[in-house]
Length: 256
Image 1: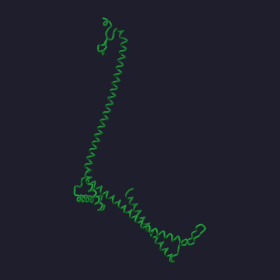
Image 2 (image 1 turned 60 degrees about the vertical axis):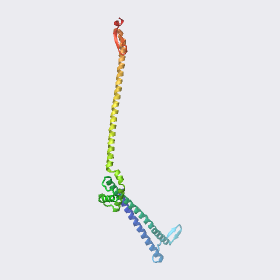
Image 3 (image 1 turned 180 degrees about the vertical axis):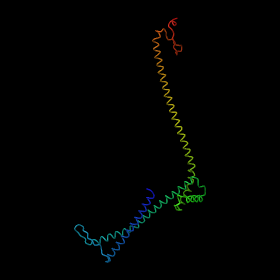
Image 4 (image 1 turned 135 degrees about the horizontal axis):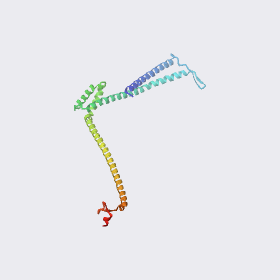
């Protein structure tokens, strides 16, 4: 709910409360005067009959008029307490509105203090400097001088906090954190590329090992096939002393 709508509701509630109070007082005065005139014999009593079961009360109008008059008078005695409650509510609303204005003025002065616009160190002169700044600010023209003075004093008290968290220092901290974040993102990208390269090399090594195992198995199969047909061709296997290479020799030369 916006501030304008809330203010309109408060104004309507205030007006209706005042209207109800006026109506209660007027009704009490009229009934009291009428009852007093009736007691004096100048004004006639209310004439009505009431029945309760089989019993009929022909003079019930006197009791009804007297009871309503008494109730109206008692309500008038209750109105001062209600007026004190409404006054307390209004003071609370004014206090709330005043604190909201003080907070708005203080936020403006504190933002200017963080930007480094105030340079005077003396407490009295610092308050005057902030007060002059708020008086010239276009968003604070409608505020009362007392509110601006309170906000200026609050801003002067928190000037150490404004110096610690000044806009310049905050901007440097943000720039430093942004640079660190960029470095971390760059490092993560390099890690991802290294992981991808490692995965490709690992897959490549597995493919090479698989091809070597296939080639070795084919070579062994070829050797097995040659062992079967070498005697028929007149050759035999002659391994080298180290056993790494096997040469072929004709059978006749081997016999000599």
